[in-house]
Length: 71
Image (cartoon, rainbow, N blue to C red; front, top):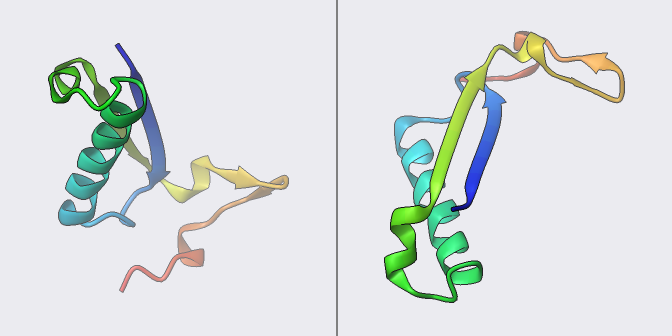
């Protein structure tokens, strides 16, 4: 049973984009791990967690919410 966890900055994904991400990741695992068998989809778990930008850093630099233009 594959479990995929995605962490992203809160506010970057619209509900539509989040739904698409769930579907595409599931489809990818069905194709690769499940050998293309659609019945494998019931074993795929995708978890998308949204967190504040300040909980992330890259190259030792902490992200800030202001770095993302969410408009």
